[in-house]
Length: 301
Image: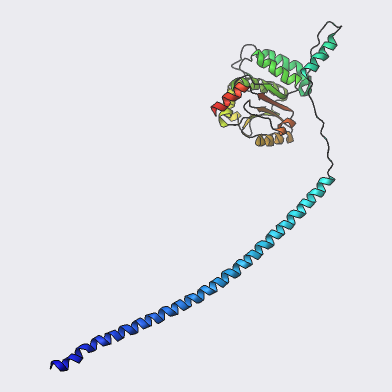
């Protein structure tokens, strides 16, 4: 009985091994088929990428060549236009030296026995009497209840002398030494605004250039106090406009002149230089800070 049952006991194990071997063979065949398919897809993708990159390279090259041709043509047209342009030399206006003025006065008074007052120059020559009268009045008691846009503070003699020189000798356009502080410069500017208001009414606008919001804030507070103004008087469409950059100020001044109005440009003492474009306008006042004042400004930044 035991000898007859032994072959039967080993038969299931052999069948199971054969079945497992067939399954492994089928899995291997399936994997080989997938690998073959993926390899074909990879080769196809490589061909597409190569062709697409080559096409894009040709397109980019054509665009670069077209831009190069356009640039060369534009430069040639610019060169031709420059050759045809008539260059006009602008006359250089030189203000007389104080030494020359003193010599002229000495020559005029030699033998006459009297000293003649120098004549007012430039834009305000016809308004000399009014300007002198106002500057004299500003040095009296302050008028704290004056109308807005009129000076409410008392002007120091040094500030009055500065404005007299600026109005009557410089013709309302030039640099003057700073008074030593932004508040005093704002007081001097307020006096100038008050006089310009008497001369031009509402046909002028004050443009103040300072490099930082803090400096512009000091200018706003100083002018607001000296002229009895409110915050509404400072803005793009108001009487006083504050600027941090010269290009924006110049653009505003150009628009004012196009409308037939007068821009009054004020440059803060902390500005290291006056933009050349500002010099073209008829009325501008630049405060020149001393070395001590500029060093103090640098320390505050």
